Image (cartoon, rainbow, N blue to C red):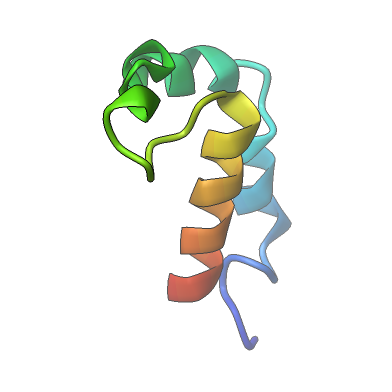
Length: 59
């Protein structure tokens, strides 16, 4: 197992779950911080992409 996140489909499932859009919207404060911070996500897809990249790195 080279990367625990990439090799584990059960973990990837959680990021694609239907409730994740509501959870991420709450966590990211309705995507309002992207105007203030250049690294803040501007929508759901951007946030999940960032989460996946971090999880792959720490794998």
